[in-house]
Amino acid sequence: MSLAHAILGFLGRGPMTGYDLKTRWLDGPASHFWTADQAQVYRTLDRLEREGVVVSEIVEQRGRPDRIVYSITPSGRESMLDWLVEPHHPPPVRDPFLMQLFFSSDLSDEDVLEILVSARSTLQERLDALRDRKTEEDSRIQPSPERERDAALSGMTLDASIATARANVDWLDDCIERVQRGLPGRPRRSVHQHSKR
Amino acid sequence: MSLAHAILGFLGRGPMTGYDLKTRWLDGPASHFWTADQAQVYRTLDRLEREGVVVSEIVEQRGRPDRIVYSITPSGRESMLDWLVEPHHPPPVRDPFLMQLFFSSDLSDEDVLEILVSARSTLQERLDALRDRKTEEDSRIQPSPERERDAALSGMTLDASIATARANVDWLDDCIERVQRGLPGRPRRSVHQHSKR
DNA sequence: ATCGTATATATGTGTTGTCCTATATCGCCT
DNA sequence: AGGCGATATAGGACAACACATATATACGAT
Image (cartoon, rainbow over all chains, first blue to last red; front, side, top):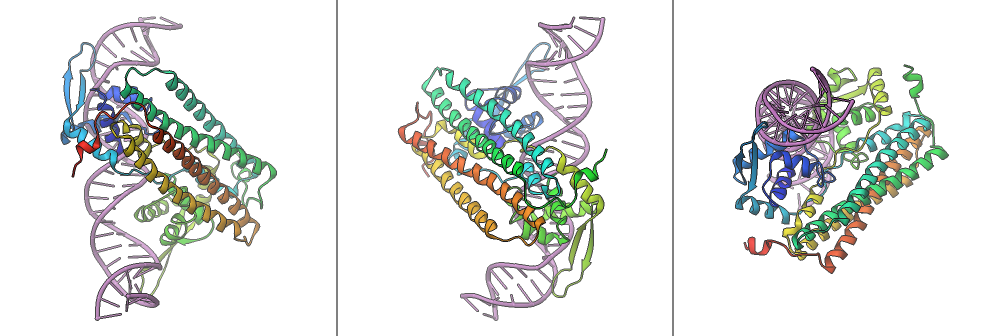
């Protein structure tokens, strides 16, 4: 599980609660390469503590649940470094959108077009958000050489997501053009005969 | 689960066994947008039959296990058409490789470079394979207008994967160049001090 | 002669991830 | 006054997925 290593990675930069991990990091600077459910974060922290790679300290609070501040242990740092030098490749492909397009021969050209246009607009939003984050991160001045290094690497990963998103928007534009010129053949069954609701 | 709809989609083109679904389609023409375990295919077929969207017919064989040939039912076609017109967006991002790069500030420039070069070579192979499939599919003549339509859409999805892969190779080239010029800061902890095995 | 591969389905088990709900209080907005 | 969002953790239930193993035989290669 890579979530465990994301957690170790962030705890390597300083002690934190599960809440912080989720809201300040996973939902923010890490959101373009990993997503995780809140429940899963807490459960993973539990597991990591049982494994001895993190330790927790309870900080009492008034009015709120006690904070459980986790820190990485030396064994945790070791495990993270081991993970860092192993080769990690992108995960198995599983893309419902491409699947939809693949099986769209039963739809009319108009329906296919609609799907493509809608996907384009979603992707464009995502791309804009990524670009905003990139300019924002680029303009932020880092207080230390270590942070500069972190920022450079973080920027590189953002560039990857931006490049991918842009390539996909371009591809969608090509598809839209092609469908507008008309796809070969005709749909076997039209949706409009089917779903007259 | 989209696997269910992949299965319905392929069964829509003709009756088939679980074995065929896995070996002739999922491991082949569908592999760039979906991957599935053999066990999962059979279990999903079971479920789909209980749901009444597919029916099975047992074909006895000598020397081999009986074939269980599945066909899509009218209700299955309906369910597939419903799914086809719904908007489907790419799944949540989960990329161990980007994560690795993000947390690589504890590695030396040389180690980061090694990771990038290795990723590049894997991706390049993947890209070559996709391109081969594309030329192969393009050169195949389709027997009917429906097949032509299928082929056009299939080609479009292949183009998406190719565009993504190419964008990523280009991005990796940029990264490699940048790291060769040197990343800012220095690693906090070197791996070489750590793993002298 | 045996080893591997293709054909064909099935189960057991564990892991990872999702969704929903519960709890408790503070502060802000309407 | 009352509702909503932020702070903070936690458990139950389930779906999806991965990995290993079992069974049985034909056929070609070494």
